[in-house]
Image (tube, rainbow, N blue to C red; front, side):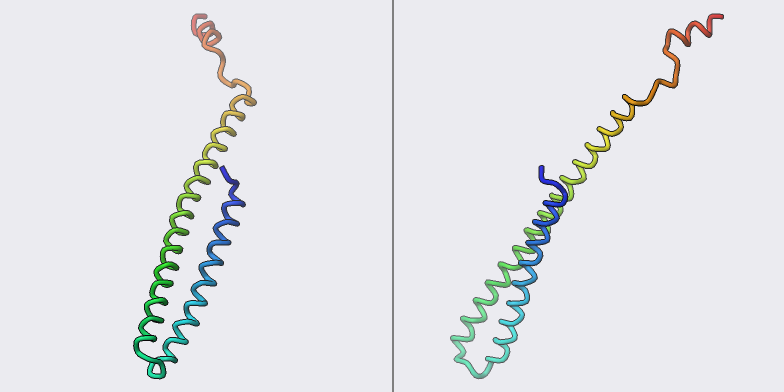
Length: 111
């Protein structure tokens, strides 16, 4: 299982890639808006279709990243729970018995 810091780095890298793609798409949309009325209608429609396709790709990447983050969060949560269980077991091994053994308790009650 990947470490939490490795998961965070991978997720951050994907988020940066998505943000860069969104910025490029915004610039492309602004350019298309400027071209309305100056460019051939068929050519403009083709450019719009390409932009819509890229928008769909970016949305798919965002959804995929969101699912990955959810899954990674779950994995980290499970790993942290396992570590907590291990610490409880270690603590139990290190902690001296406070309660007397059952045999000692029986001896005291019979007196």
